[in-house]
Amino acid sequence: MARTITSDVAIVGGGIIGCATGYYLARRGYRVTIVDKQRVAAEGSGRSAGGVRAQCRDPRERRLAMFSIDLWQSLAEALDADLAYQRAGNLRLASSEARLAQLAAEGAEERHEGLEVELWDAATLYRHAPYLGPGFVGGKYCPTDGMADPVRTTTAFAWAAQRHGAMLLPDTEATEILVRGGQVYGLRLVQEIGSLELHAPMVLHAGGPWTQTLARLTGIEIPMRAVRLAIGATPPLAPIFAPFLSAHDLGIAARPTVNGQIYVSGFAHPTTDFAKQITPTMLAELRAAEQMLPALAGVPLVYAWAGLLDVTPDEAPVIGPVAEVDGYWLAAGFSGHGFALGPGVGLLLAQWIADGRTDLDLSAFRYDRFTPGQLAWQEVTASSVLAGKLDR
Image (cartoon, rainbow, N blue to C red; front, side, top):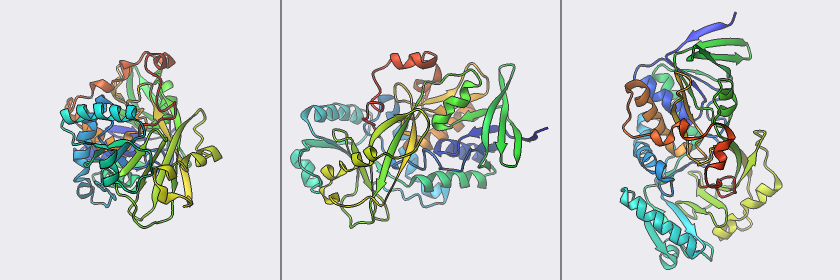
């Protein structure tokens, strides 16, 4: 007979969403167990570029991002950890008047909601950013956006959750969501030393692109596709630029790190097998960073890695309880946006679970907004992520 442990809330997934929710719940006195088939920050959260932005969001996500960034300001102190958080700004570049007009319209919406953004014409852009290559007609800048270290941040949430009494089970795979009479009662887990059951009346499923596979065993079909994204790192360089940069017309983004390296990321590549191998094509695409930043011409990438994103048809997450199974909650499908949103989502989910209400309305992210199954992909505009234009 399998060993049994008990908890108030079981969380599947040791990324920033799972660890942040676990932390905020544990602070409120809940017995929380976080399980991950590998280790904290091993997958999407730890492999992300680390952008923390509110601008250029889906309108449904904008207030959520602003709410989360308010938390980011004091997060290092709250978690007692160095997160390498820099409020260095985010600059979105336009190579055409059409793209600049799109940024201008978006900026008007953002300012209406209280987000500080500036639209720059070409002259203003190159005055602020003389390091850019030629060909840009302008850009949009948000000074309150920034970046942080994904592994440090996710790990800090996990450790802080443990300090408040949460249990962390790495190298532990959830193989079944236990349901009886339409009510969740826990998880079946497998470890190297054997199997066990984690009994809990609530399961929060925050497993990234793997969420879909396990959810299907309960009859829940989450419309989601895995997308692979490569990131390359330069050697440490003398400072070139400060903000997070992205040029969607070139399919490239870049940001500096606290140790002087520059991370560059490129096009998204759909995958069906959860593979994280980097192809020569993916590496070649990263060289487009030289068009954006001529100072990178000839600079090698000393290493590169790939991560998987869990992409929904409308590129917005699924957050909240699933009506079909009492006690089963989802927090997945973040489509590359989960790192920045993680602290806010974690706090709001803890409020929802503990109090039945939240400081911010999350109803736009409900699971039932999609038609069951893959039909959901036919109901929305073609995904920009799957078209290789990741809005990260």
